[in-house]
Length: 261
Length: 341
Image (tube, rainbow over all chains, first blue to last red; front, side, top):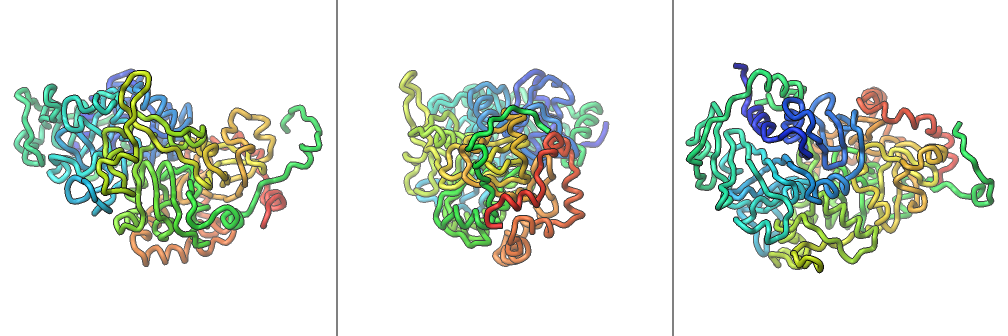
């Protein structure tokens, strides 16, 4: 068995969530690598788009610097814009699946990429302690895609009981909330981390440990989660990447972004 | 040359060029305190960074910036202390990381940052373009983008930022967005003719809507081309001259960001610039080296340097510009057609 990094395991496990033929939107960075890996490996007919409205492209020369840069624009079959990609194809509810990242995430799969205060914001919250990047298109993807896969490095400080700020909604505060606000999409189907895969309990919508990796364990995942993480009674170990998967991931990740420790 | 039938009318003979020098455009069209839209608002891509540099050089203050995303332009304007309020969907630099100048301004409370998303900023420009009273939205609802208004933080959840409304047909709840009609938009385009018929290579992001929403539209073009381009490919002219007030020729207008078809993003300078903007001293030094010396838009070429230009212009998208190169006007012709040269 070849060597692989935790980041590569996370990308491959995320890629396995993408099915052939789906209309799929990938965010910048790791999400894009996982998505294009799926396309190169088992989903050749995935119809991928970036939120900038760049369609039909396969990145060249390394990980794209952004959703609009020359590396993603070199072999596109259509250029349109945000209103088309994020509106007509995503906001409309038409897109099957999206992949987004998270700086902070909570037990209902709510994602914070906006800023860190000192705990959840409320009346009178002023300037944040640490400004992050904001929601970008992830809020629109999380609101409206059929399902969403969230990627995050598994650390206790990131996996919190309640995020400081909901940039992109998961199940908000539990069952019924997405419907109450009128969100079209189904919500996050999985949180794929560097240590395992979390999925929502179908009754409580709280995320539970569904699977761990060859090199991790349920105890390790629980210890690195900031809320009292439940372990599914059917918890299983995820098959490690096979040589074919790794070879194709390396082809997509030409600059070795995922192999950096 | 292009063959198309023409009619020699008086109007055809007397229509004037809208080309104006960058410094003059900034002086004529911008004021302290305006609502300013840097288009496209792409963090790494085609963006009117040259216009932002000139805003800083001329010392504009108290700007209210509305933009799809942040970019090195907003990063620089924030670092300069020129931005009182910014409304954006995204405030980072994608793979280049967090925007340090913006970050410093937001964390210190100097800039009020109002968060939306990349779709809802485009929808707000669309609403402005259509002159709608509000735009219904089914995203940003059920999140802190709706509940937290940075400009009015004591009211949480906010009732005024994205008010919940009822769909009159189905009775369902959704959100209402405030449309945007910026005082001035400085929109980056790859090619424009002297009247403002423009082609954008790469994603147009929200430039189409913005060009109809803004009260004054200034195009910031990498190249000025003959009007024959528009006659040949009228479908590609997504920004037509009838909505354009002025055209600025600015080579490498998006530098250090990229302009698909023309140049890659300058990885080295993207990092150098963002690292500099992290501190007041770093910003001052950056301004001295890379903002103040740019008195005319072509001065930027000296700063980038021949070797770097050679490298950046031979990227993977170069072929995209090939069909258009024959219409690019020479610097001499452009100068003759430019006001304030």
